Length: 350
Ligand SMILES: NC(=O)c1ccc[n+]([C@@H]2O[C@H](COP(=O)([O-])OP(=O)(O)OC[C@H]3O[C@@H](n4cnc5c(N)ncnc54)[C@H](OP(=O)(O)O)[C@@H]3O)[C@@H](O)[C@H]2O)c1
Image 1: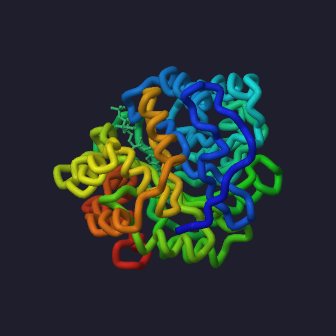
Image 2: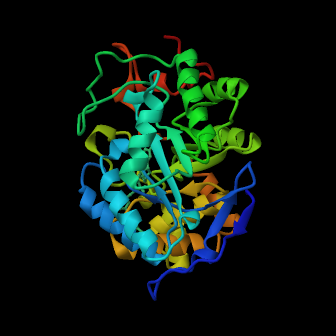
Image 3: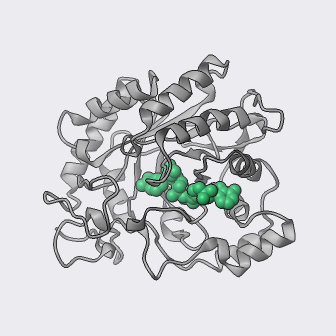
C-alpha cells in the first residue's frame, strides 16, 4: 500500500458532496501530493464535449479536484470553460490537479511545446500539474475508426525518438508549463531505458488497471522506482468504443468475487473496483457524466478501504485481460496487439 495523506483545506459546495479534505491523496516522489481519485474525461465517442464539460463542473461541485484530460479527447476547449467556472467559483488553482497528454501526432522536434501550449490555451490554464506522453508510438488513427485501421506512416518504438520527445517534455518543466511529466501505456523494458536516460524522471505512469487486469509486475516496478501509478478503465470501461472490444474480453462488474463483496457491503460493483484501486495505492480515474455515479465514485474513494481479506480475494481474480489493446498503433502487417506490449520482457524489435 502506498503512502496516503489527507489533503489541504477546500470545500465542496454541493450539500451532498464530499469534502476534498477527506479524499485520500497519494504522495509523489518529489514530496507533492495528488488526489487519489480523478475524473476521466474521455467520452468514448459516445458523450459530447458539452456533456463532459458539464460533468466536470458538477464533479468539482461534488468535491473532485483531479481531472484527467487529453488533447485527443477533443473536448479540452469545452473543459477549459468548466475550469474557468470552477476557478471563478472560488476554488484555488493550487487545489486542482489537471493532467493533459501529448498526442501521438506531436512527438516530433519542436512540436511538444506547441501541443502543450495549445492544451494550456484550451484548458485556460498557466500550467498543468502533469503532462503525459499518451502513447510511446508516434502513430495516429482517425476519430471513431475500427480495429483494423492503421496509420500508413506508423513506426515502432524507437528509444532515441522517444527520448527526443522526452527532452522536449523536460523543457516544459523548466519553463514552468507543467509541474511534472510522465508516461502512459509503457512497459517495464521501455521504462528501464527511460529511467536510465531521463534528466527529469516520470512522476506518474498512466496504465490500464482494474481487477481483471492488475499488471502486478509493472505496478511493483513503478512503486519501487517512485513512479505513481494512475489507473485507467478502473471499472473495466463498460462503454469503451467498439475498436477496443474483442470476444475474449471479460467483465469485471460481473465477476462473482466483485459482486459478492458488493452485495455484502451493499455497494455497486463499480464502487468495489474503485475501492480496490484506492486501497492498493493507485489513482483510479473513472469516467461518468452522471451525478449519482460521480458522487458514488468519490464517496468510494473517501470512505473505508477494503479489508485485507477482500484485497486478497480480488488479487486472485486477475485474468491478465487487457481491454485497450492498441491495435490501431501497430506499425507493420501480420502483427498482433501483443507486439505493442513487450510480453517477453524485451522491446519488440522494429
Ligand atoms: N492513458 C490512456 O491511454 C487512457 C486510455 C483509456 C482511458 N483513459 C482515461 O481513463 C478514463 C476512464 O476510462 P474509461 O472511461 O474507459 O473506463 P471506466 O472509467 O472504467 O468506465 C466508465 C464507464 O463506467 C460507467 N460507470 C462509471 N461510474 C459508475 C458507477 N458508479 N456505477 C456504474 N457504472 C459506472 C459509466 O457508464 P455509463 O456512461 O453507461 O453510465 C462510464 O461510461 C477515461 O475517461 C480517460 O480519462 C486513459
